[in-house]
Image (tube, rainbow, N blue to C red; front, side, top):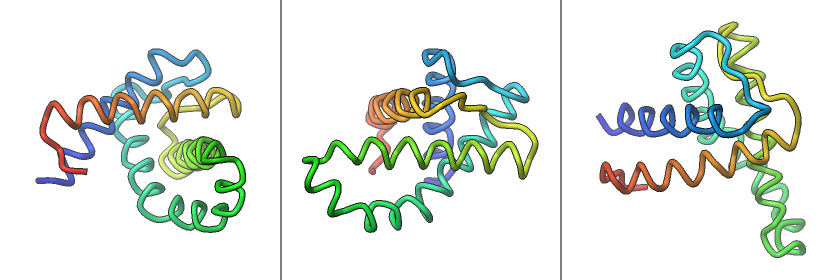
Length: 120
């Protein structure tokens, strides 16, 4: 049940990001958002911790600013995976769209997660 709730919160956050950020385009309607949210969750659970560990020295030197770059790269990877594996998802136009999209997804996930009582 916790996974489905987390997936729903991520899907709401991804939908908000595609609505707010001009460089993110949904391919496949609502199902595209759900698949993209699933790939975001999988990338956040598997690839992103490795990227954060490898980039730790740069993150320390930049006082945490480089963490935004890691989040944007993870969002680009999730976009590429969803579009190439499932042929639906969210197309991220460039790095800046991924950067703003990752910020919007983080903020909306925190707000919606706190409303529904998600313990993250």
